[in-house]
Image (cartoon, rainbow, N blue to C red; front, side):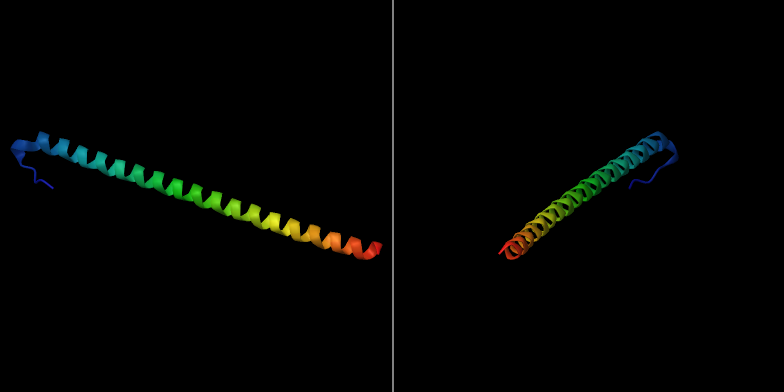
Length: 73
């Protein structure tokens, strides 16, 4: 970082503004990355839940078929 002298105070204020704007850009990028990661995790969890639910439905359906075939025979 640059040190500010009394003769160069206008440049000092502009450099502080550019530093704060770069920090805000970094914060925005970090927030966007975090939001994207959270969305990806939620999508993966929902997809896994759908796969598990489908597997459970298939197993229950197979059990019902076995029970019905045993009860009719």
